[in-house]
Length: 304
Ligand code: ZN
Image (cartoon, rainbow, N blue to C red):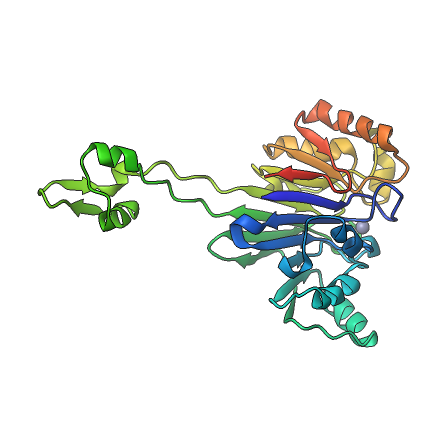
């Protein structure tokens, strides 16, 4: 699975950073791409990446500020022209349905695929046999959400080599052993599948936050996450300003990752006041609190 940053700037696009959008490529896992936020120009960024709009399955919107949603109408329309036929679901705060309906209707845009729009409330918003997605409210002046993705644990694998050593013939029996069942062999021996199955493989956890001031709901969303993606609009010394504008600093994000026991923090939503060199300093600030921190750049990708 790959986490791909399509836009990492705050508020307005700059030459180096487009406005917010983040993709999770799950092509191997479910032949799908999930997108988080869709700032203006996201479809242009996608053209410069390996992502295909036809593979988009879900879009999660954190909040309705323009730098997180102005790319939606264009992207949704273009998907029709790029072979998108499968259903697409958009999740977001109250108002996202009206925004999409109005902009598509007023511009006379017709989609060739089924579009479902779900206005979310805190709690579980999606679950299938692979993933559970929950969200909770943050603190940003308008309704802003953080999303937590929890992958289902994978069953342990059957130790075929050891079964062979024990003289258990390969065949349909293995299917039953794989399910942990007890099986009687032709020679009368009883074999317990459980004894030949390795430990469960823990599912991955990803937390992606919308814009926010530090807030107590954040911890549960980030708890033990393999990757936390969090805004860091301001440097640590601009804490007062960050509070005033309802944003976080580098150290706010790092403290969250630390208390939540996360494994890896990626900072994004970086103000255009910081050039490339200053961005590295932002990263260093966060690393003083939470060493395994990276700062995202447009088109950076991280394996999860
Ligand atoms: Zn915002």
